Amino acid sequence: MDKNKVISLPTWLLVNQVGIPFSSVEAAYFWSSTGGGMTVANYANEWSWSLFNTARFIEQLNDWHSSCSLGSIVVVGINNKDSFYKTTTTTTKENKRLIMIGDHEYPVEDSLTDDLYDLIRSSEDGKELIGYWIKLFVAAGYQLDILCNKTIGVAKSLAARGEISKAMDVLQWAFESDHYKAQWLRKKGMVFLFNLCNKSTLITNHQFYLTDGVKPVKKVAALPVQVDQFDENGFLIGGE
Image 1 (cartoon, rainbow, N blue to C red):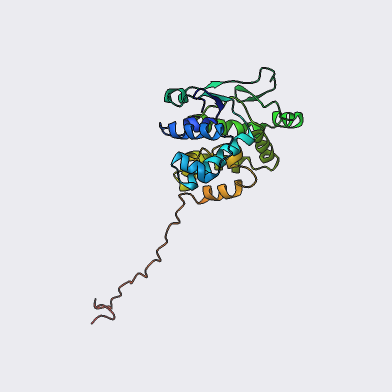
Image 2 (cartoon, rainbow, N blue to C red):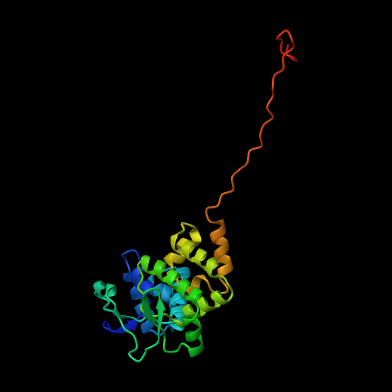
């Protein structure tokens, strides 16, 4: 393999590995170098990973490559771990379309349709949702330099259906909850708006949010209180 090959990798792969990104980045490098043409079993054997972890990792890489690029270009040197921490962010020079989110302008992908671009720019709710996601995303240690089509499309759809509040609940849960599912999503780097709040996942994730940590208070039936009664001479009625 070429030790100095330049490949594009998702930002979550570099950041979300708790200080030990080498094995995952090397695996992604190998997967890219082979064009993803090997079987899951062969990749698992090559990386000394379980079949389950290998399948999930490849699924994430495929999903990322087919969805959008965040513009992170990594110069990969297999014998130099330090290179895995250094990214050079690039954007298309011809890309002049921007969306103002809060006080920051973000470029969009060149392939974004004009209709969707105009719709999200005019949707205050949609932009508010994207801004809330970016706030959580960046606070978690990620970097965002370009808004991809899927993020914009999901935000627009949620705004149109009046589900912004529900989506914000899910985002808060996904980034901050100790729930096993939320932790799993963070571990796998599946913390994008289009992962968490698309039409297929919003209802399920919101149900997790509603039930997370909510333990119904166990109501104990009140025991009948016995009130002693005494006769006119001071003796207990019914007593022996």
